[in-house]
Image (cartoon, rainbow, N blue to C red):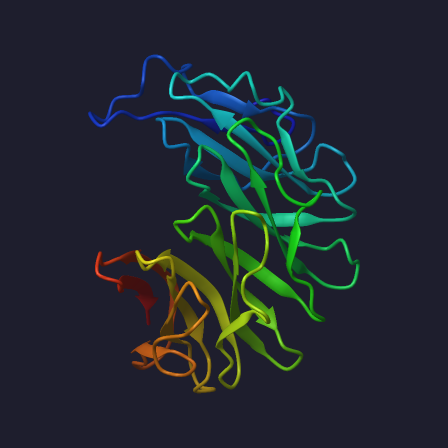
Length: 277
């Protein structure tokens, strides 16, 4: 709306379908820093407000990750820095953030990170309810193996930590991996868990809590070497996969199935949606 670059705004819609009159008309400005702020993701703060995170180009050199807290009243939290919390401002590009609640009024944020200048790695950071980063400066490395690791997403583990899921390049094709980080920022599985390493590519994972501290993960899968299908796997808090090796076939019908999302079924499983050709 400023006619020069992209900013971040938020608005509260009531259960009646009306916009909350306590919030500014056309939304609360979450970040209007110089240059572009894009692709925000959001999570509840547990008290009627929300924590928002996004890739930020305010440095005019590279993309970083920032976050801000908006109160239920529609005001920006005065306890948090006025210029937002720098979640990660490491060298080079940080992008594609995802966010979940930490269960204590703060949030856990993950992103893909080019600081090595060789390939994308996966990092994660926890921001407290008062807007203070809690773990290693610029984030904890979840996966920094050779080749690119991309498109991370988070599922709460229900104990102040989270399960991180991503698509990783093994050197020959793309597979799906996961790692759990606890409330102190310590990775719990050594090494990370391979959810699927079937032939050819597995990509675009999505995940939901299984209600028991683990996760159900879904992805698109080219193991047939003919078309994209849908597969899924469940992983426990201890890092054990519960279903078939390399995942359960959700749909292997003719032509392509892509663009999955899912939601919990409330009984440890999930209901999965996809676009089908």
